[in-house]
Image (cartoon, rainbow, N blue to C red; front, side, top):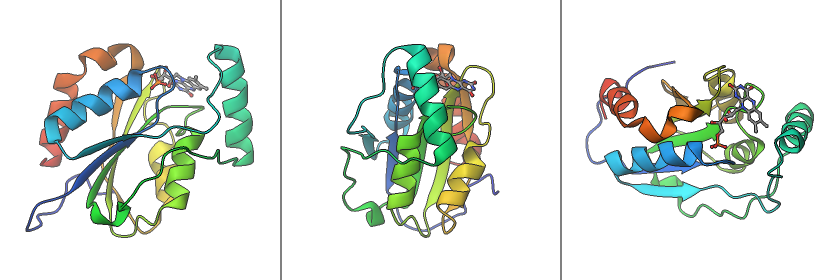
Length: 168
Ligand SMILES: Cc1cc2nc3c(=O)[nH]c(=O)nc-3n(C[C@H](O)[C@H](O)[C@H](O)COP(=O)(O)O)c2cc1C
């Protein structure tokens, strides 16, 4: 995996796209968007996940084990017009949440640069970058960022350092 965006002429078109169940990943997505501009899109499943922690943990486990891809309300128009995607998800069972799996598998992301950002409570990026790479083999997956969920509201400097390191 490369860690920096290669020099490229012209302006990049950036999309920050994320799923968030309890708000932490949404916080980080807003901070990335504030810093870089571009477009910001929340992925919303047709059937909302339960708020009850045990229920959502069980449902997520079942969906990830069976490869279930929930239907999305979100329709991304003109995905081909973006060069760089920041793709955000909570760490669910060491991977990305199923709505992100749906998005990645239903869009053609050939030639895109993808930066994963993950909020978590201990296991960091986990398998997320590898799972994203598996779902979009023709995209380039670059260095991701893991933010502790509890620290998402105060992640501005962590996000700025990461973006600077990436050359953004
Ligand atoms: C279904 C489920 C599974 C989770 N699995 C993990 C995990 O494997 N590792 C971890 O560090 N945190 C795990 N967490 C904690 C979340 O990743 C963390 O709270 C995250 O910041 C939530 O993001 P959100 O507020 O954007 O939904 C899990 C949470 C849920 C609800």
